[in-house]
Image 1 (cartoon, rainbow, N blue to C red):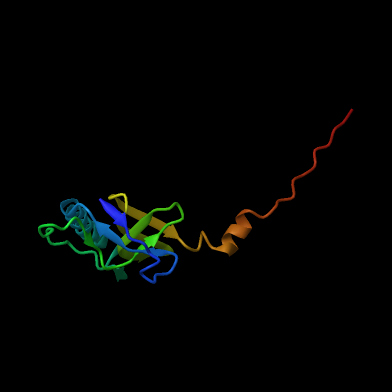
Image 2 (image 1 turned 90 degrees about the vertical axis):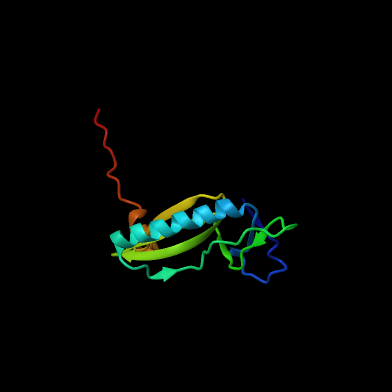
Length: 136
């Protein structure tokens, strides 16, 4: 449904990319679902602190095979890309919702304080294990 464009011509940073939409109808359905999820998550978490311009597209004109999305997507570390629709903050938790290049909706819950280096250093700090003693 989504096809990446060459980022070398587009002057983007390493973690951004541009996609073109091959299936406009499916894209518009996904956008509609994200709009419904924004309403639902806003009831649970309040007004989003950040929203991204993910919009429905017009049908293809005769002879067109795809439409380019004009906004950059974020590359993830597993060779995929995501386009967030909205972000909320609840306590230490950041909630991000959007679509992936695999044409799925994602919702991520990230506790940045629990994932901070300071906290992880405490979790993975070597512990002093008591040495077992053996009696004969």
